[in-house]
Length: 214
Image (cartoon, rainbow, N blue to C red):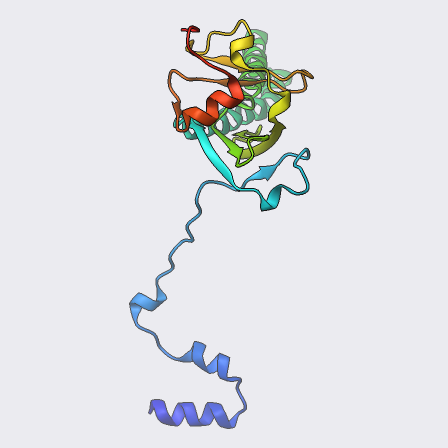
């Protein structure tokens, strides 16, 4: 029966790729396996050097908690969105006399507080360092941090612009310490208490000797 069906299909001029779709397949071939991605889509900062593609970077620092921070940032955006969305119905219910003015003030206060917290949290998380890389020449620092939406972004900074922590008043083994640049363009936050230095030699060349700054 199957052979006669295949012969009739060929006679009607079906393309061969259509025929392969019509053929029955075992159940394990029909299973859909989701594609695997290592991390999330990476956005690149506009200050990326044009010749950096050929460079090899070595990971010198990693903060394992950056994934949790990204999830928390996305959750905060969702929570803030839900809080703001309920405001228009609240105004409508108040105009219809269904809720008192105090309830409307309470809803507005909660929405305003959620927006303020979203701004503060995203401001900090966008500057929290997840991973640090240095190129083989030791001249470019690649900083992996979060965007407003909780996704990864890579920012490239010349090592010559980084102020060594040993030359600042920062205490590197506090919960957080600042990574500053001489031009003051952008400041990042580093946590050596919860993060791990993977290549101490390269790390010291960028940020200076941390001894005596406990």
